[in-house]
Length: 164
Image (cartoon, rainbow, N blue to C red; front, side):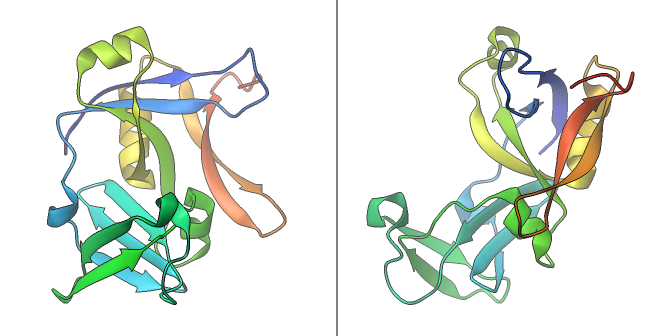
């Protein structure tokens, strides 16, 4: 995966955090990814691209309407995750797998131009920093802690120090 371009949707008309939108040449398929697991999280990292699930392993957890996902572990074992949840970057960051940043991903340059029909995705913090450096923005990623569970996140912030 190569980062080709990026921009920030500042979301100034709503109370939500800004989102980093990233154009990449390609994303790996799940069959190419190798997952590690700990504490109910299954995480794969491949060249800056990250994919993760939350799954207890006690049967169907009810996520994705009970859908099953086939994954391969770093040891080459094939595992079926039944009804996992998508989780969030903060949970991954709280464990040994982070730091990661949830972003909007696209492989089609027109998506970046028009500003919609992105795929939800996750990058390592290093890859996300590369992306924000490619963006034509005076911005950086800032660590913030959300929720009562001390979950760290990285969000785009304008370098001017003004409201993001």
